[in-house]
Image 1 (tube, rainbow over the protein chains, first blue to last red):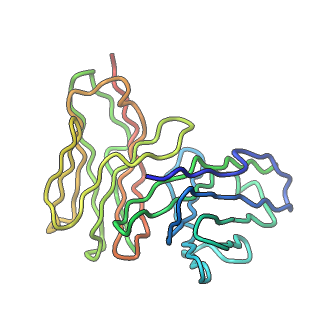
Image 2: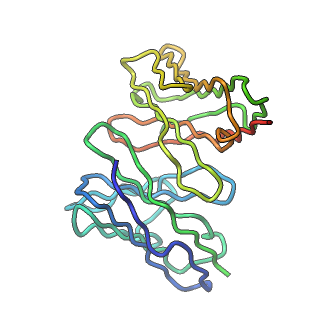
Length: 114
Length: 111
């Protein structure tokens, strides 16, 4: 497995503002993913972030709202832009290890938008 | 896209009994089926997985089965203990590694 960290662990933000979430891994990984978990719900894939290419977004998620950076093989950021209360969720990054499809999750960022 | 359905949504078992969670998937291209356990306030933890070339896999008290024909896979927990209480998610992915998750099952083990 790998050690995956996220910053911040939680935040309370005002509507209309933006928050950038960081995901750091202690080893180089090709594939990183960002998921959203709304309160009491399952996980939904937002986008796939591969180093050296543009992030690919799932249906219902757009780059203007959730811009993603992947500057190297150990780091990625997800920005939640122009936030509304509906964006209140836990945002999790995950990494795929070893080309065997196994994904491991970061601890998550709990976002509350007021 | 892939659609994963999971049942039941809640499951209460007596300590020592078995728990079974069932999932179905829609995309015949899916070939990897992990199960995650999520305790309250914690990240999802990969507990076991199965690939499409295998019908069954066991790891101590947990086992997974896969029926590719029926597009159905299940998690079995035997001799349940209080620490098994958590939300369990099944998921499926194809060669793109994108995980589609089921809705989750809240398992409560009664002492």
